[in-house]
Amino acid sequence: MQNLKVTRPDFPKGYVDNPTASVSWEYVIKRLSESKNYWLSSVRPDGRPHVIPRWAVYVDGKIYYDGSPETRHAQNIVQNPQVSLHLESGDQVIIAEGLSKAAGKPKPELARQIAKAYCAKYEQFDYAPKPDQWDAGGLYEFTPHKVLAWTQFTEDPTKFVLTTD
Picture 1 (tube, helix red, strand yellow):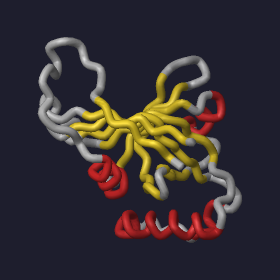
Picture 2 (cartoon, one colour; picture 1 turned 180 degrees about the vertical axis):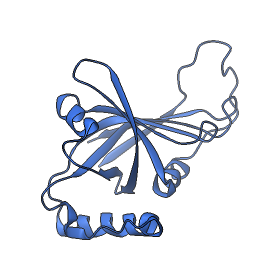
Picture 3 (cartoon, helix red, strand yellow; picture 1 turned 135 degrees about the horizontal axis):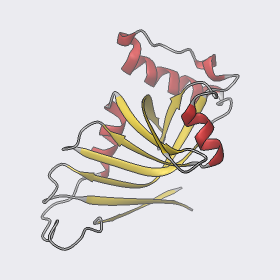
């Protein structure tokens, strides 16, 4: 079971002194579910950052993306699974931090859910994976632990901390 704690991000004095609203977790889920492009930031073995846009889907509280295990980001998460993920907008902001790992062969029902979500978003761009596409690997699972979100920086910055029982 996942627990959700809602607070404010920590900002230096003078940045956001009197926020008047909060972003809802439902809004965050909607944005994570509907967004087309996700920016994934990982760390190279020598400590340098690596950022890449990914297509991804949000299913059951996790973000799934795929790609070859030979890609730079896939090699990075083997060494250091700590990643950040940001949606494209700098105004309607969703920034997630958490752990990413190779998902292995997903269970059939999960594979169907992921494939269906991918097809709904990306089939118009000629990407429509079948549920067995990841049987030999190439699927990655990002579990967010902290999410920062705002729609108006000075009015509704919100921090979500997710923990598991």
